[in-house]
Length: 222
Image (tube, rainbow, N blue to C red; front, side, top):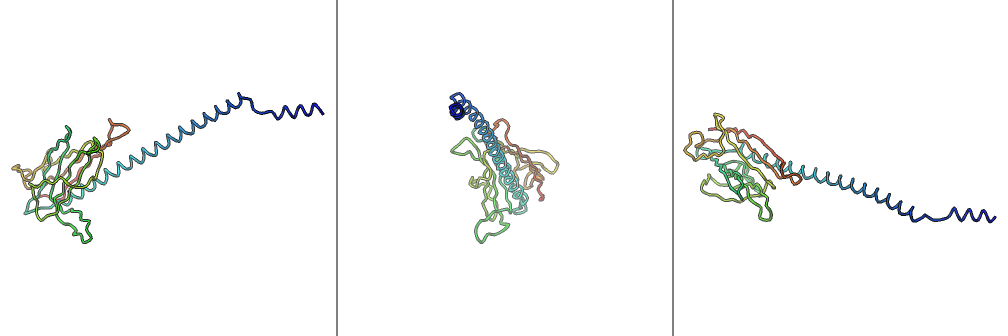
């Protein structure tokens, strides 16, 4: 009877300190592994979401520019399109404005296909060191070349590169274009195509920005 009581007492003893510490250590290893895996998965999800937003923003910007340029319109028999270099904080971008029938009117009684001066230019953000692409839209009855209102809406953020190249009817490339110039290839004429190169900042790899390129062929020629 006494031996049975001793066996019961020995079998019901608690864990030793070493066993408890070992269990805590194993639990810590498991939790650390789970947390690292969760953090990695969460980071991948965030990166994918950021990339999707960047590609969406670039697609919308290039689609809008394509529609605007495809609606290029004559005024008094001539096209109006001017593109020039624009320096911001020591970096070179380009500014573009042209007469187009692609005015966007958000009023209730909007007039479709209303002509307007459409402009694209880059602006430095005041609260950061980043740049944004702005689209301006000023409706009117005729182009006003001397009027330079740099107002509009942001259509693309975190811009690093905004480069345009223009091609005349002979396929020659030009970095600028001016339908008011004395050049026989540009005066009153639209380019046959515009090549657009755009790069957006990559926060995970600053030396490898997201690059986008497209060529817009203009349907209208004088």
